[in-house]
Image (cartoon, rainbow, N blue to C red):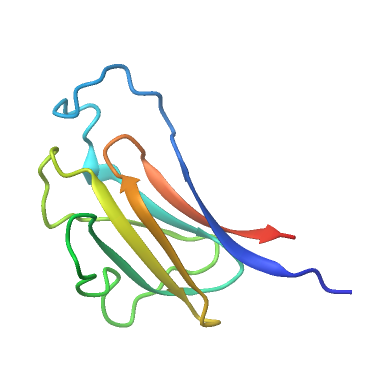
Length: 119
């Protein structure tokens, strides 16, 4: 019998913050933020927007680009300010599943990971 697979998401820190100031370049390193696809399905569309904005904007991956299972992509942020750290993420997979995450802290975490969860 097949087990039901459901996409889930998790934000994981690779390092522990050593201070509380979000203005510190060591903590606010948005230039090294990565999105990982650890599911068994191709991630076709990825939208990231500042949490304060009402709309998603354009597909972050761009035309004809995807994140294959096991793959990842580094993110380039339109607003490099260390004061803007919280982003919403919408991922649309090849099987039609949509996964949305709100208030992801891209300054304190190095990556955001999508993975399959066995139920």
